[in-house]
Image 1 (tube, rainbow, N blue to C red):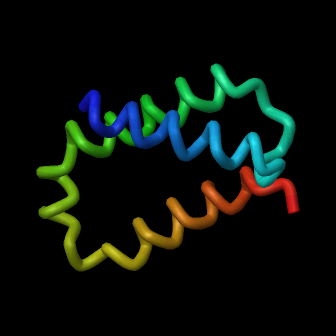
Image 2 (cartoon, rainbow, N blue to C red):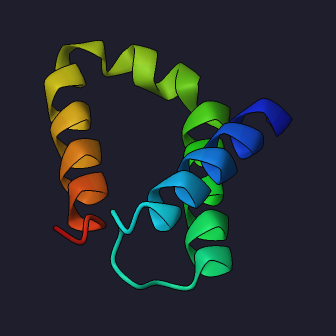
Image 3 (spheres, rainbow, N blue to C red):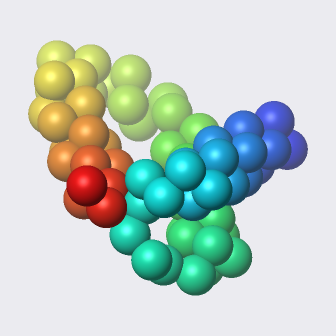
Length: 71
């Protein structure tokens, strides 16, 4: 899980530096995203049971992440 945290923090920091994200507090954003991704990682076994709904998962995640973009 530390790997996920490091990656999320690095990506968020880079996107903030490049003014790609809306003006959210970076600590709040990093904490929320880390919690979200960790929840997904912990419950990955449930995702296997819903493999036929993969497209819906991707659409939801994509929509959420795109909603954070500033431009």
